[in-house]
Length: 477
Image 1 (cartoon, rainbow, N blue to C red):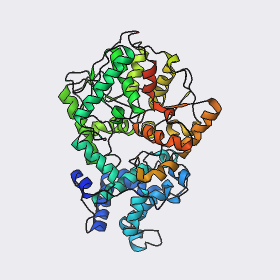
Image 2: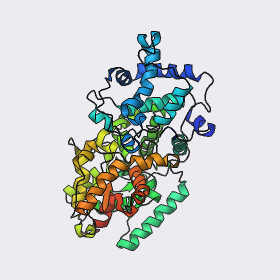
Image 3: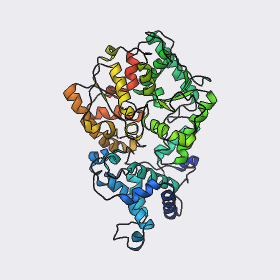
């Protein structure tokens, strides 16, 4: 897939993020200096550079390698693109005898390979599950992208999105008036369909909960059904909540571009709005990498969150929130409402391999499944080697959900499609439930290319939206 590379970022995308607008004149020296700085700052990166023994355990674990057959998409080979430059400038053997240790200069050829193949990694971390040394190739990809940003060689799609978040508050660039209008329209729709005034409040100071959902939930199908499911849960439980017009985005592409500073800045607006709105809790919607950033990094980036109510987890996933309410008897579900569906569950990679959910180990696997079983009568698991911590990426994560990489996305989704088709043929599965906005968008576009209806994908809270009985029992806060 050497021909396939993302569109480069322009100056207007780079400078608002404090990156050089164009490639700097002394980019080789600056790139090597940046690598040295990161080796000192991130001890894990130094370890990952030194301990790989080329055992090959990761070689056939990447969905992009399985889909494309390109050896540079083997995790070990992709990492070698950075590792060979590391050896050249940071090891005695590489400095003295570069050919003997396969050390390479950081030259134009190396940079072009970096730009191509480090943007053919979705940072899903599946390879790390199988590495006997625990090498996290996702972190190596993030490091390479950070170095490229530092010398003015950025990726248009991801930098443009980060810019929209800073300027407007969300990835899609939805302005406040459009968001207000959409939420009002959805409230009218909920009233027509349920006969109940179910609200989607915006900027409501003093609400109990700040709901931070992916912006796709406000406008896109199938995401929007999950948003309506969230609203029904809050309404039925009698818990007030609000959406913030500025922090109207859970996603954090700062992680995809490998920038700690950008990741921190994006996360900070959520913490700031939570303080400003005086909420007691923060609940994160169905977004895989957003949950990883929230669960794993929020406290380090912008903590402590001691202004929130200590009786609740910080942060809390919407699945855990709904599951706890259901366990306490606050919700009533009519499973028959979903009887036209035979459901399977796709574990989204950033939730499965980079976070937890709830008080118990493995909650990120069990809680969404418990919600599916609570709202449906027919649930089927895909092959054990393709779910839970071994799940395959959807093929669009890591900042690759962009049309110029369509060929890669089509090939990268193939391992997941293969497992899905097996349960569709053998068990009659016709619905894939999941909890990631990127997976929903990727599957929605990829499924028809493989002969699967796009309606076969949706959120776990879309099932909740169908099954919840409004007014059946008043909530328990």
